[in-house]
Image (cartoon, rainbow over all chains, first blue to last red; front, top):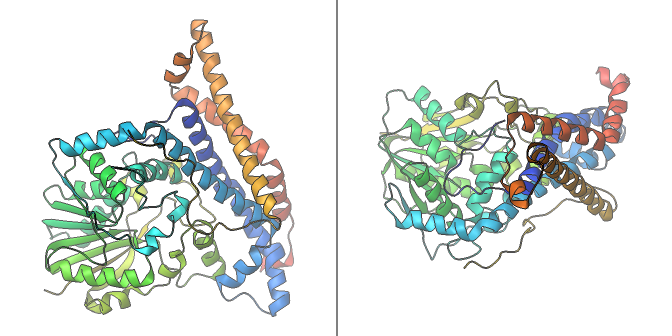
Length: 393
Length: 108
């Protein structure tokens, strides 16, 4: 059994909470692998003939399919299962955190006030961007920016513990798979480069950041996010694991760093949580803070382009069912155009696949990565999709 | 001292209505919650039985501090799988029925 590595602020479930989380994990997996694939037959036998009868042709977009699929009883019950399990999973982790909240807050605080190897910079006047404040992404109660009491760490703990269950351990025992995969990708694409100063945009609880730091042990690592609670938690977590990271409460659209500061900026699958205009603004800011010759590397789930409407419909489940309102839009975004608008040169832009989290964590043979994840995003052991673009020297 | 934060909290964002009758959505989530609690109770009984087998007596402290080893955890996983399979019998049968017949549509 794959278990999450303990650290000073990781919430510890009681016997019953653990039993609840174990069951929901297994139920989620069963629904995903054994139940949702039946939607393909429901589509072929019931929905597609209806669309053909109505329109006299095959569906041309995923939206046409979705309009009819939501009325199909098999889709209804399987989607209700998926959504409900997701909600119950977060709530079960929330119970664990709230029971231990005073102690967890105290632990994070004493780490912060002791001898530290990294740092934490919060901005009391910070305004949370509306695309985070008004939506709880992937149904996580309180979202990324929840700050529920003085010195709160709930959002960070919820993301760290909940995502481990939600991804069925795929991010790795340290939840650092995305960062490790990104470091592998960087080394493959830019073997000559030795970045000294690195920025990660959208670090949440710092899982990816600690993984990325492993690949660049000598670099100064900065990480930003918008929520104070995720940053307090991320800082305490990183310190507890002995990884020096400087956390800042900052909006990627409005970075408080000087021009030409970083050799390498990373955005680990954060764009699907941002509005379209925010993606453009972040690219502009990244271009500004990169040193000439510096590299921006981002990862996302692969774009929908070139995929048939049925596959797009499957992959777009999260947009309508998992509180991911920007999911569909970002998968249709032309990142080359975004980069060019931000000041990068199109010739310096590259997009394609690279090492995934399972490969980075050497989990490719583990049962945990063999999920088919039929309805919704790909969470199997496959390749990740990357974009990199270099600022002209 | 931190004030108790209300939990569980609903997440902000639109929750889809899956069934034609919104009460069906409520009933469905109640059934899943009940099944979950059955599994929680089963694990707890299992813990009590294992402690009794070992010591002949049991206390609340024994129960809370007990941790399953790998073999026990795998046995429990298998038990949970059986519970889930019984729970999903009807849904699985409807999937089999949907996939069971070859139609002109399937061949395209």
